Image (cartoon, rainbow, N blue to C red):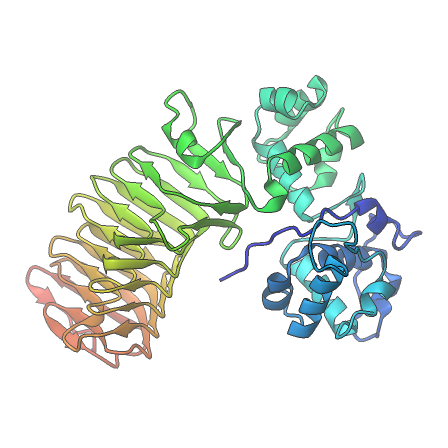
Length: 455
């Protein structure tokens, strides 16, 4: 699972901008990785390296950037200063590449890894606009605000010049992507950038607290936004960050995050994250993790709802009984999954990943390393199932009488299923167990019976 970024310091971007004076923001040339320390002579890449060295936490430096664990630990320790405590007077900032290079286990390879992470994962170019680096976490927060806040919110809450907020709303179209695009808007310049950044800091957007926006207004919690019956839009935008607590939903909504590993719902091992009793809620681009409940560790569908998850990771959720990640307790419901990953979810009995009595559709889904006594996915007798391009691997099934996929209903369509190294049987359908199925498995079932998965 991708590590959610956290800011360990708000780096003085003006310092980074001056780190390689003389180069232009527009150029931001890339490094020839075959030449040692050539990165030192490149303004754009040096900015990226210094920004990330000053900003990313130790886990992200180690796990996501891929630095040697000793380099990651030493960078983090250096920033904390002599007392080893963040936010105190002796905290350090890397002002130049020589200072960073002096840290033990940091050299050319580490700097290139930092540069590549900034370019490939964050979309950084090395260019700066009004001392804010394109692709930086500050930039992402500012662009999000410019794209999603209403004119009134930009005017009153952010305190932009009224001409600036009116022009941002008028010009946003399909959405701004870069700071340069914001800077092209009339009456948006350094003062507006500063106010957008101040608002992002005040709202905790740079500390991993996220931000909930519906109808262009900011809400204290996702539940508040869900419950607002006066809102005209069904879309709720969630900025990157960690969200906790249970959200109850009984209406048609679009809940859109900023990506797996960036918008994170964390049950902290004590509660599920979503209880759905009606409507047609759709969830996009997020990670749901560490949920815990007896039935449906992360999500419980408890009414006539049609639920969609797309671009969502379910990681390390647990149910005391059924449905480690998702429990569909209502027959007249449906669950659709597109480009979803279930990993490390656990249930004591049925459905390490999913246990459902409602219809289930899965397209481009991965089930990996989930654990339950009676199946990774278990569907009830009335559930219609449609699986396409699904991977089922390394899952654990405790009972020899069950399998990773247990389909109890009469109507099943399965196309291009890949089974690999599951502990226990691969498939149970029409009361028959199959194991060792391998790749490209396709079959179908109706009231008359099933075609042969082994054919």
